[in-house]
Image (tube, rainbow, N blue to C red; front, side):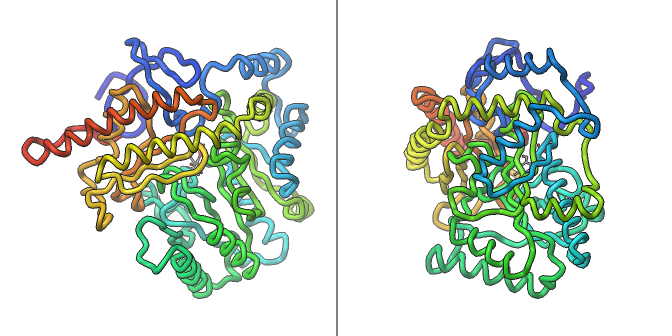
Length: 453
Ligand SMILES: Cc1ncc(COP(=O)(O)O)c(C=O)c1O
């Protein structure tokens, strides 16, 4: 044990951060790190932005906190309108929170309360994907499909139905369309067995994030799920905590696919690391029904405070002003091309996949069978440690339900420029070359010792 009072996950001792600027961070020993994952896919505008600082200071000088039952505030109203506008009016109502988990909890509860108000209280179950990640609070965990996170709490979370989504890397169907059709048919069968009249909503990320390593679901699948929800009378909740506010090159990832949700949640990039702020967006008829039944029985103390909303507004303003959606698409293409070129050098890269500036790189022991490395080898942690040694931060996770499989996300700030993408790729290239040499050495030497992070 160290003498630090702080504890998070088990893992190696961490460097102490000193300061940051743009896409770079420095530790107190003077080492520089390129932020290739925007922290936790959060610092979407990079670090040290004077415009965000100035918007926050202006608000701090007026009023930092007011409680939502006592005052309305101009920043909250303006951010609400801005978010509705980003959905092009598809969703008309906004409920603020401070984190992704809170946003997911809020969506689950609003959807459930809607059906209670609508005289369908038998709708009490949610359907989500395995693997998936929707947050760490008990409700959000209940729709999360990631074994190690679920296991200790399985008796506390009301189990939702977890169904597989499409896997365009590992499927053995005739082609991708046939695969999607089979997955949809199996999902329909699961819902029919469970009783479609018991389902509140489908919850999914339109583009997979940390739990799947940027796995794409595709238009055919998303449209199929939308059609199933309509047929069975349940709601579609899209979790855009990670993908929302520009990450994939559209304001929201669903906009790539022409599929409109009934509820949408977003967080991480909305505050861009400058302040915790998230939001639930919903169709107005759902909200009206709940409000008419006595109000939404839910809320958090810090939700929608003026400082949070002023920060979110400044973030959206910066994305508009600097045309960062365009930058995300252009730099995303450059990054994807570069990652694929690196992957082509090494047989242990199974797949590179992604959209905008959300890229996942999956590692496999055998590219022909697509078999994962033995879980205890912790390859995802090893490559992340090597990247860190090369001055690059990437975001590692397990691919196969949290139990095995190795991938890392490359998700730099949306502000990244072309030269910085090249620097990122050079550093990653050096880490991958070292990983490759270490794998080759392992046949004759001791395995790499890197603890799980
Ligand atoms: C898709 C998704 N949903 C929900 C969450 C939970 O967000 P938070 O950590 O802010 O509670 C996350 C966090 O990683 C996420 O990626």
